[in-house]
Length: 381
Image 1 (spheres, rainbow, N blue to C red):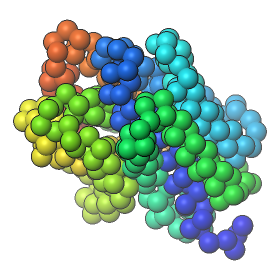
Image 2: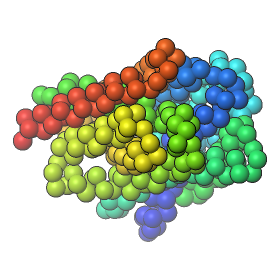
Image 3: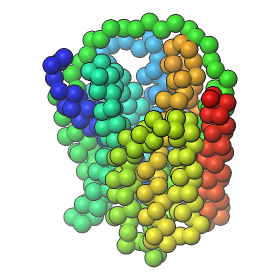
C-alpha cells in the first residue's frame, strides 16, 4: 500500500461519499416532487421524512465517533455503504409515511457511519502520503453523488419510469459504486494516536451555535429546492437541470473554498461562504424565475459542502487537545439544525402555502452564522 498511488484511494473516497451522502441523503430532493404527486404527500409530511433521515445521520455520526466502537474501520465503511444501497432501493417498495420515515432514518445512520469511516481511512492515509490536497477529491464525492442523482432521476423519467424506478435506479448505481470502493480503499492499520486532554479556546460555544444555524439555514433549500421549481410554472422545464447544477457546482467547491481559506483564513472564508449561501437561498424565493432558481442552485451547490468542511476544520483549532469532542459537539449542533429545518419548512408551507417564510428564516440564520464566525475570527487574530 505504501507504494500505491494516492489517486485510487482518493477516487475510492469520492465514490464512498457519492453513495453515502450525494445519493444516500440527497437523491430525496429531486425525487420528492414525484413522490408528492404520486402519494399525495403534504409538504409537512415530506419534511418529516427528510427530518427522519437527518435524525438518523445525527445518531450515526455520534455513534460512529464513539471511541468505544471496535472493529475494522474498512468493514464498518463497506457494511454502511451496503446498508445505504439497500435502504435507498427499499424506498421504492413503500407507501406508508411511517415506513418511509423508518427506512430513511436507518439510511441516515448508515450514511453517517460511511462518511465517518471513509473520511477516517482516506484522509488519514492521504496525509501520511503527503497528499493531503487530494482530500478535496474525497469531499467532492458529495457533489458527484448529487450529479448522479440528477441524472438517475432524469434518465428514469425519459425511460418512462416513475418515482419507484428512480429509487431502484439510485440503489443500483449506489451498489456499483460501493463495489468499486471495496477494491479502491484497502484496510489501513496505522499507528493509533493517543491524544491528551487540552483546553478550549474562547469563542468555541459561539462557533458551535453558528454551525448549528448553518445546518438549519442550508437544509431547507437543499430539501425543497426541486419542490419550489415544480411549483414555479415558468421554471418547470428546468427541473431536470437545476439539481444537476447543484451537483456540478458542488464537485469543485471544497477545493476552491479551501484555496480561499489559505489566503484569508478558515473562519473568514466560512463567513464569506455563508453570505454567498444566504444570497442563494434568497434567490429561490424572493425573485422567483428560471434565472434566479439556477443562481440558487449554483450558490447552494457551490457552498454547502465546503461550509461543512470549513466549519469542522475551524472547530478543530479551538482545542489544544483531542479535537474529537469539539467535532462531536459541532456535529450535534449541525444535526439538530438539519432535523428542525425540513419539518419547520414543510409545516409552515402547509399553513401558508409558501416556502417564503421558512426560507427567509433560513437566510436570517445564515447571516447570523456568518456574522458570529466573522467576529470570532477577529478575536482569534
